[in-house]
Image 1 (cartoon, helix red, strand yellow):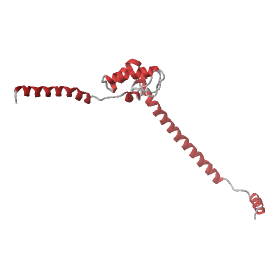
Image 2 (cartoon, rainbow, N blue to C red):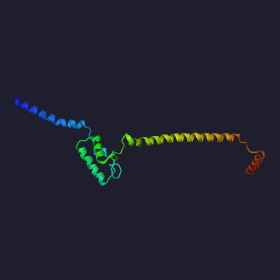
Image 3 (cartoon, one colour):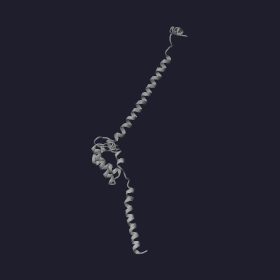
Image 4 (cartoon, rainbow, N blue to C red):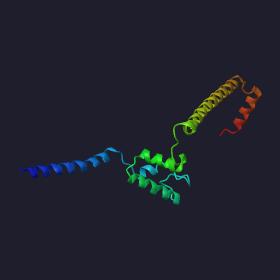
Length: 159
């Protein structure tokens, strides 16, 4: 094989390696799409999920996200850009720190309080039922004259 042929093969291999490198780099970075992002962000005007919003502002936000996706940004980078552009209200899920943490804690605490209140209420209800059962056991039956009258009334209706 001539020197020119070897040089041509080496050049082709070099071009192939250079061409494959950006593809490998793109494959290594996680790709995202508008549908993935739009289910996790809100329209800042109407306050609904971006995937459900149809306002002009929502359309502009979708175009903004599409440009970032086309530029190869990751989901976290796109969310950061949205927060920088529109503020924290754009995120559908609140951050897990600061005052936003209360969005996670308040329902948990409210549920715990409801369970405790329900347990106390059931315990009181059961104690009240036990007291009324004891009271019924100690109560005397009908008097002898009431028994005779009841028996006479029932005898009239016998068939």
